[in-house]
Amino acid sequence: MSQAQASARFSAGSWRDIMHALAGLPRRAAELWRGSLQFRTVIITLALSSLAILVIGLYISFSIASNLFKTQLDSALDDANDATVAAQRILEGSDAAGDRASMQLVMASVERSVRSVSGSTSIAYFQPSDVSSPIAPPTRIAPSLSGIITPELHERVRDDDAGQYWQSVALEGADGADDPGVVVGSTIAVPGVGDYELYIGYNFAAAQETLSFMQLVGTIGAVALLVLLSAITLLVVRWVIEPIRSAATTSRRLAAGDLGVRMPEKGEDELATLAASFNGMADSLQARIRELAELSVMQQRFVSDVSHELRTPLTTIRLAGDVLYGQRDDFPGPTSRTVELLHTQTERFETLLSDLLEISRYDAGSVELVTEPTNLVHLAGDAIESMHELAHSRGSELRLDAPGGHLDATVDPRRIRRIVRNLLGNAIEHGEGRAVVVSVDSNASAIALSVRDYGLGMTPEESARVFDRFWRADPSRMRTIGGTGLGLAIALEDAVAHGGMLEVWSRQGSGTVFRLTLPRSGAGDAIVSPLPLEPDDIDATGPPPTGATPAATSEATHETEASRNTAGAQRPSAGRWEAHDA
Image (cartoon, rainbow, N blue to C red; front, side):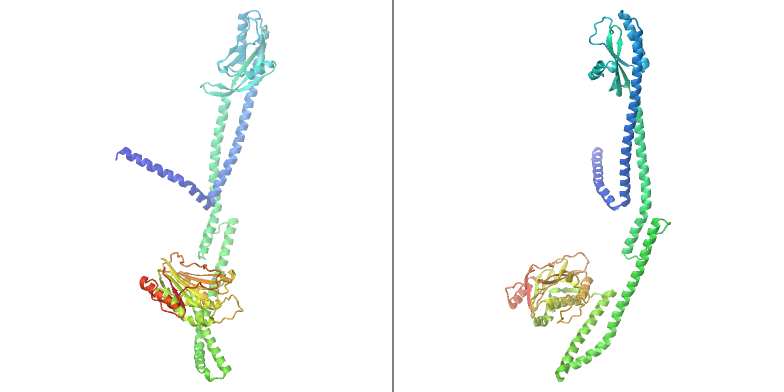
């Protein structure tokens, strides 16, 4: 490659870089405008100051130009009038009415007098068109006025021989350029001949140079003033905005949990008052948060201690209750019923204590997951089997729909099993004896399990509170399963601990869907659930028929697993299972 080619390629690359940088300027300016109060303040101040200086400068420039022109014009008119009077006196005092040579000498004297009095060398006089005297001096025009005097000015001067008229013209200057000026026209009476038109031209080049110099000085002064205003504005705005910027930084650090950060307090002005007020607010907030944290720790410790302390007497009560429950057939009817109630409530009390201990662990942040690769289809099948008798007693049919796919996930199986059992229990409790469908599906990053019932459903306000502790949608409704009111709260904590989500969809008259979505690897990346939260059969009162008997479905499932090995070995359950290929 030659040096010229290399130079051309370098120049082309540099030009592309320059164009790319220029193309990015509007975007960077827009980012600065949105993100910097200081930049916006300086730009707005500079723009308004430029507008004010421009308006004032134009007004001053036009005023000076108008006054300067008027002064020059008045002086020109006065000089032209004096020159015309002097010329008329010379003509009236001459005695050359009958001699052509004498008349030419008189007109030469008139021309010298006009030049001397008017101070202008641009002089012209025109012979009347109707003159017949042989001694009449001919028309004489200075080269600078040739072609300058317009017919309109000629007509006005001829029509009014006692007046003085002027017209703005462009006169040729010493350097050959056109200079601004005026031509003043009037009439003089030549004895024995008639009225001649006398024109005197005045060049305003000196006045124009003065105006240009003043405009240049004004422009330089305006630019210097704008630069000075920009610098002053930048300093003032920076001095004012710095405490605001400090307050913003401090508030962000407070929001991030750094409760010990404070704004510097300097002086006794409004900014110092702002800093003092902000620091006082931060002190109050820190003290309040510390009190709440201490109270929360005390509450957690209290719940944990009470739960632990109650375990010993509860164990004793449970053992005694089990002895009585084993001999309930030997007791009279009322006593036997009392023993059964005691046994049931003791079990519920024990479950409540376990749930309280679990919640206290989550509140204390001491929960540790014991994860292992787990097949959620198997786990859901086990949960369905364990809940079959309860579902049968309520008249509900349990179905498992597992399309297949990437089904293994690294989870804590005990906690996920607890979530599924809790969701199934709620679906059976509120399913009004209709079918309950458990769906499991997965994609490359996540695996999801949903529990769909066709019960009464909930309002949006009730759905928003469904995960609150000890909350019930209908307090007047009796619990038939005997839950503690903490199941969904614990299920939500279990899902969050896995880095997943537990969501709910519900509509009155259409039932409820709970969807659990978990990352397959626990990497913490963004996950997309493979199952929809809102079902397709919103207005249905039960799941669509499958068109296959349980035995046929189980057989189809076995064939699918033998060929694809995606869902794992399925065990026939007491409910209905449905397994479909992806």
